Image 1 (tube, one colour):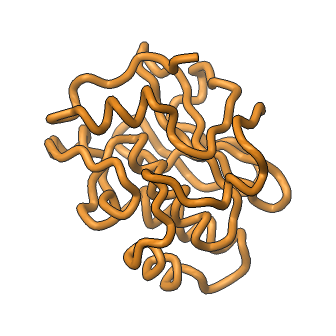
Image 2 (spheres, rainbow, N blue to C red; image 1 turned 135 degrees about the horizontal axis):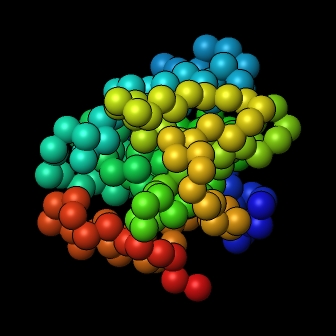
Length: 179
């Protein structure tokens, strides 16, 4: 894995990863009942299970900021990753954003430093043919055969963020990262 930022940036807030928002802080406090692994698992399950993927449900809303995703309880894979990263960082766990090419579309993932190793996790949500689960020790992806971009970002690349901000509904997904 290549890292696009300094180590402390993977604990910081950004425009999309608004870890200081009261809702992010409240959910993080509710989920924090054990050690870092238990917390990372609880946060993963929360985003995967309580925030449906917009395209799976036909929801036309396209929130992109972590707090909005958690509040509206919907989001594309990118936005769900923003929410998971925000919860992890609010709980003191280093986390970043990763991407893979899935059937010609850029798919958003989360990279987290769990149990002293970086793992790629996919909180997109389950549906027929996709069963994503948390693991502290190995990558768990909805599309395990598809290529993964090697860079872990502290904040969403402009390509992704601008696409999310400009979408009236989830139809024009970015196909690749710039740069």
